[in-house]
Image (cartoon, rainbow over all chains, first blue to last red; front, side, top):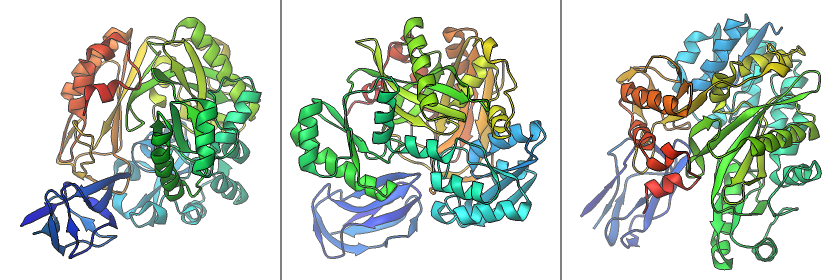
Length: 70
Length: 447
């Protein structure tokens, strides 16, 4: 089980992947927006997204859980 | 003189404008979003009005809310700062229609320069050099490929209505162009509301050098020297200096004369900036774009000339002559601005947070234009600029020496900052030699 967490305070601009999707290492899961910059959040291993913890428009804090991949 | 002004902006630039307004006896009104209620500029204004929630679209970009705030406080003028609504001709028209004084160039000049293709064509007619590029908007990939062929690779692909480096990309061949065109078009639509694209010949070893102009109330246009803005990441400026180490006397004279012609071509009033690319191999320059507002890096020009540019903006808006003798402008020494961003110093990724410690450097030739103080929270809603550390010295070497000490003495705790990057920049042999171009940071951070 891999946990993907936010690296910084940001707004969730786009959710690209969905719960249940199979993803490969490096695939974009969500795109955050902070300080006028888009920051893609990537899968760090291959697997299935078991839980997606964010929705578009959410504000995440540094360290918040974004997705779990199994 | 103007009796009062509403500053339609936030952070360091709102504070900087409010400082001059109060100094010369203009009542200053601040506006703020919920995210900014505690920032220094709000407390330093004579009055402050909340205009909405943190999201820019519901506050600093809400023209109606800003004009309503001016009515509420009986403010007689609006200064837009930079960014947000500063280059929005529609907003300038609304301000004027509400019977207020717009502290900026006329809406027509904003419009003519805001469309980058129209601006290029206009500059070419005015005898200002432009690089080979599009004379009309490019709207599909087929037209883009034909333009690429005609202009010659490499080409820069960018939004015709754009700015701030957003969506810009370089294409070295037709395959690159396919990808760069898609990116530029989607960003152009999202950020600027127009899919129109412009292609321009890309200058390989280029310095980004701009000229400060001032269109006076009597119609004369002055050029107040250049600023070298070649230290960039993601096509955005990180440090600026004047004079440019890459521009000799003859080239400077040509650039200043061209910038005056550019301003005259649009009947420019107020402070503006003519941005150029200098081809360091050929020793020539081309027009890039004109920013019809006060520039972020205006302090370096103020430090060497002793002229308060915001004061001149107020005087010109009131129809008055400048506070200085245009025939006696005589820049002294060297000045550098380092942009202190809330971002990590390695990858330059945003790092907002609450400021637990904020200690600014002091000393000879040091000026800090800061938007924050200890206790403030830097939020993800706005750009990452925390402060501008500006340094003036008798020559470039003394300026860099003072800058090293100032960076070492600047302490910010809480958010991430790029102060460590600036320390590295000031010791970088290429930067220190003065012989650098816009690829400097990508060479410091290869990957």
